[in-house]
Image 1: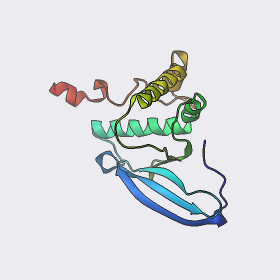
Image 2: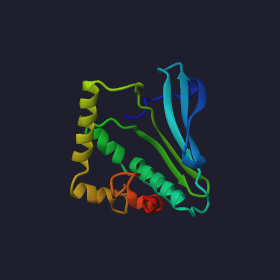
Image 3: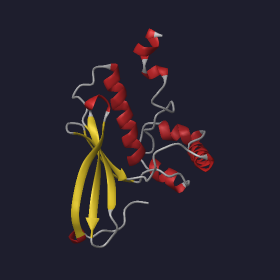
Length: 172
C-alpha cells in the first residue's frame, strides 16, 4: 500500500487534470500524473473541498458532515484497517483540514474498468462487503463511529438515509 519510493530529482513531469466536480460546486477531484526516470508512471488522486464559510442549508451541512466523515476515514486509520483485512481501498497519502481554506484529501488511485460485472466480479464485490462488515461489526462499529482519534465514521452506515433528508421526507 502507499507509493513506491521516488527521488524528487528523478521526476521528469507532472500533469494534473480535473476528473470530477463535487456536489454543489464545492470543489474538484484531480488526477495528478507523475513521470519519473526511476519508476513506472504514477497517478495520485486529490480531492480539494471548499465549503461555504457558513453552511446554513440542510444540504450544505449534510455535505460538510459527509466530507468530515471521509476525512476521518482516511486520517484515523480506517483505510489501513480495511487494507489489512484484504479490502481494496485507496491508500491515504494526505488529509489536510484547514477550515478557513478547505479540506484536501490525497490518495492512491484505484485501477478499475468501466462496464458491467460478470459473476467473478460480483463475487469479489460480495467478498469485499463481507470484509468491510467483518472489520466493523459490533463493538468495533461503535468505536469507529464514536468521537475521538479512532472514530469519526458515519453512525448510520451511509450518506443516503431519510434522517439526512428531512425536506425530501416531508415531501413524500
